[in-house]
Image (cartoon, rainbow, N blue to C red; front, side):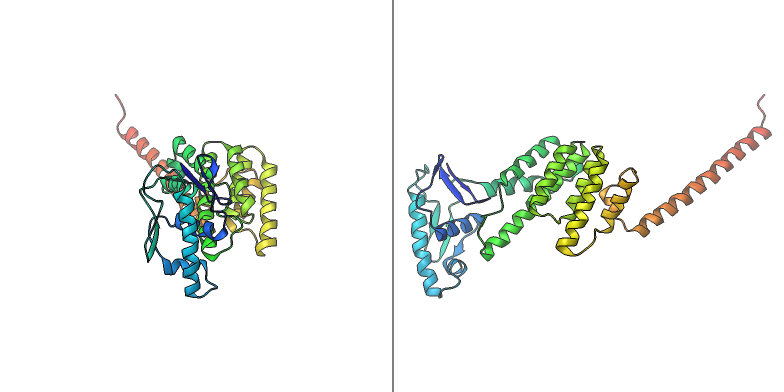
Length: 301
């Protein structure tokens, strides 16, 4: 089967052997764009302007014809096992043939992530968590590493965001299931790409603390604060500071949802709970008095 990897560096192989004839950068760029937008046709005019934006429209169309021929020749030489070509093209449109099977790492990654993205961490089963682990393991690097075309940067950021969200979901799952070391490893994978991601630092603080390493949890806060000052010239937000103070005082941890509540809301809740406690105390006294009155007026025989 034809296998294409776009996460990390571009690589295409058939039955374990590199596909010949697609070494040119523009051939790879055209193929990659079609693969990333594989569910719809694309106009030749749009592709010519997108991939050869520095030239004239006529030059772009000429370059596209040549590049398309090179890509078509390389793919048609493969024993894919069908009489249909992977590329479908006419005078105006180019698209991938949905009837031809191939393996694409981006497609596998997106499909697995989509399957679990709408499921809350509390409802994530071990089976689904394993699917998610397999998905993030497919992410061997950022999309088409080393390419800096505008269309590529947009797709790279989109897939990065999905990757971070899925790693964060795994961190939350590991916290809920006391798999603290595994959760810490997922957090470090995020920080290797985005060192100033404060939510991840906060999760790492929690995981270290719950694992019994209060000192490392406090160090994680210091690392977070230093990075935010250096890269963004800001201080940690109130959620992070509140968590830090709880860890510093060796108190039980609040949930992320509780940390996200403004302080005045928490104060209001405390006041209401105190009022309720006072009401219950008063009610308890009145109930005891009523019982005593009934027993006094109605002595048992």
